[in-house]
Image (cartoon, rainbow, N blue to C red):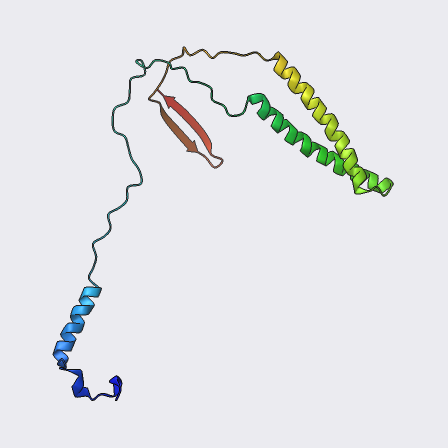
Length: 168
């Protein structure tokens, strides 16, 4: 005889209907007991400490820690512009020459390389002249320092005219 074929009396004492209802009500109340609301997480902080007086602050020299020199960044931007320009010139040459003769793509690329070489040579000469003319300047720190600036902005109108006022 298997476990599920045993007679009902072998299962042990049974609860009355009232006891079963009371136990079911206790289990339901335990499951659906209201939990206290979670504490809100702060998403901002306001520093209420008084600010420094701007007359006591002394100008401080700040070192220049650029990763890329300015002339290198300028040369990179110019080379991107040259590349985009020569691509347009090459495409234009391809369209013009396609009408006159069936020119191969290799020929158009060769013409684009020619324009790119001329533009890159002009860029190198211009960068060399610019670097030769520029001098090293040392920044002078002698102006007033303001540490507490209040900005008021008023925006009005359909086309958003903004007026910004600085209050020191």
